[in-house]
Length: 224
Length: 252
Image (cartoon, rainbow over all chains, first blue to last red; front, side, top):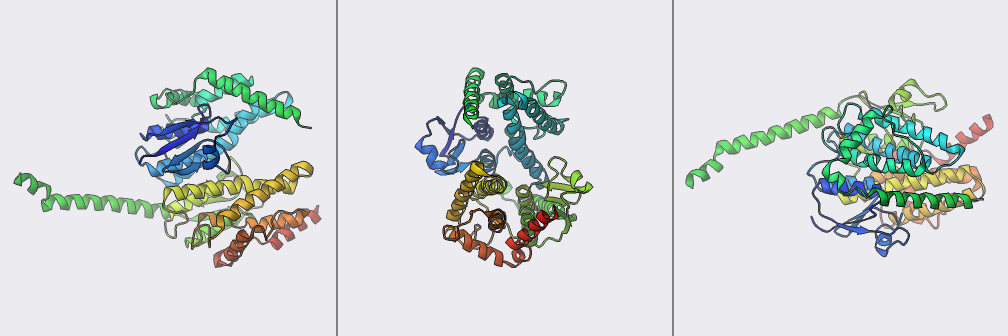
């Protein structure tokens, strides 16, 4: 079961979630760091549709889109299953993963990038989406139950990336009184050894997010 | 040595092992059969390109269900209770368990009722199906919808994006009978009524999205797909959509 490559960047949590999955399954892989400002022929060959990271390449077959990759990993390497067995529980995990990527990530990033009037509304929307997650983790150690599972990996950006986005974006979202369960889950998750070893250094992440933010704001300023 | 050999291959040990495996298989079969039990309901809207996917999947598997038409301007208590997060259709109710989001419902159906599978077995082929299903919903549908609701530069961009995404689907179906191979599968249900819906948008809004010559493989696939009996009886046709939305417009 060799021949596993991961075309990715260290800063992107979409890529880190794939690394986490591979490590939890004990799969050895080659990490190929991509420069997104100067995309390599490898990336363009393996993901011609989106030209984005992460891309998992297994025996020269590329798989793109992080949620699709996670399911592929779970189905190919059966040890330490990530998704639950029961179809209903699987549907719930998939539902919340989609919600997390479409609403929570988007909501938090929008709150981060917005300036002026729109920022308050964007923060409110982000808080609303986070409240759903707080409800889901209540009474549980991990979203996967006693062990880290699929949904923990999908939401795994929250403990490390979210507070960096708060700092760079000049806002506070994850307050202790409002999100005690989510914060506690975050601490349990990020301090798990296999998880901790993949997270990018905070200073690098701040640098990366600040640059992304400036770039996006400069694009917005140029719009008619 | 002889003694160990006898122990390893003694009839009693083999029998016990067989009984244990058989019990495990029986437990798994019981669990599978149990999971299939329970009334099935679909909360939907008859012209929705997302809802028809669900009904097709259930019919393909021979599952009896009750269809409940939702009035989206006056959402029912059942819908709001079953999908409190998005308040959208379709929702599948299996017993008392709701499942929302059409692609997730399709996977749930395929995993709960394993006859006439929609997904391929091979993980890399499954990944391809999931990738393209996501692409249909995130690129084709969103672009076409945006093109129908915007003007000027934003509309131009959306038209271009729709045309590009349809070209990719056209390339994907080239040389195949169905996206699922010789018989229809998951991706066929997902792409499903997209051509009809896009042609409806073209006529309703007065823009060009679907070039039949350029998208000849996709066009031919759409014709084959629509001829399948369970599809034919319920696929939203361009005329149905035009009649409905023109009536809506006139009512205002």
